Length: 354
Figure 1 (cartoon, helix red, strand yellow):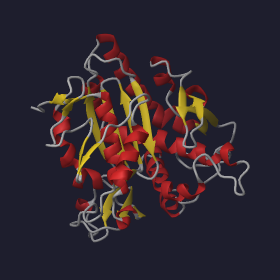
Figure 2 (cartoon, one colour):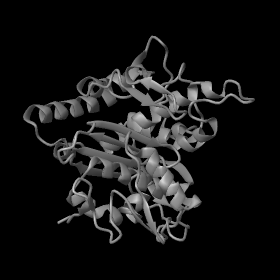
Figure 3 (cartoon, one colour):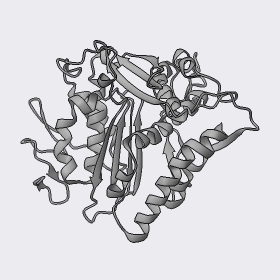
Figure 4 (cartoon, helix red, strand yellow):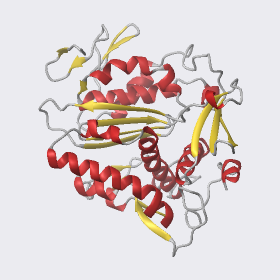
């Protein structure tokens, strides 16, 4: 199944006949209905009757956003991970401790797979659902546009690898076949969120298909995962390094997400071109991106302030507008001032990250 998985990963298999996670054939008698946003989160954060905004701008209740997956994925591989997360969340809620601190009990690979599962299932469901806003158009589209799905299939391959208990690794186009060269298939960041006495939502989910990124806020934990062969972590993490040693306001976390998603739109096209292959000795899927190891895939591409501003306003919480002051090529926003210092949103002044 493993070599076949790599050979056929770009084929979009029907939800009626195949599990969207592991890609194995499944019958209706074997399928189980899965909440894409986990049921335990919906219950504990009172999300069931809240509305989730779809890519076409329409909204649906969280409780109704479901898809059928096979019993093996639902009750075994991913269920074990959900149970661990649930226990940690309940323990933190009981003793009022930090979910950010406790989150490190979950390995990066598991966190990336958990977020990737939600991201991929949202995309798959959207790909199968006709977009009512195009019903009178000459060409009827789906909620997730058809032309996006070929780009998203690499995420499906990553999720399937985890579902089948295979490794997922990455390399560069000029790497030798030495396992020492292989790295992660994603860039994962964790941030500690501080509401500084301000009433904020305890949950938020943001995804962006072209950036191949998803972000989630859970209490004082902010997560961002980019499925990019670890390019962002290698070449852009220094810009965000000081943020890992301080608290960030929820509005600033949204801006961090916007900046990271924007970074991914600035990647060189070759760095977004993934070629997977199967390595039997490692029992792993290896994705090779089209860039060379020593070259910065973000370097030399022109910045686009208008695109950055648009991304900011896309991800800002409801009722909040990105306030951007432009001086030449520099920006002052909720995150940093002109000198690059982290901004204190509540007190409206720079603050130290020490």
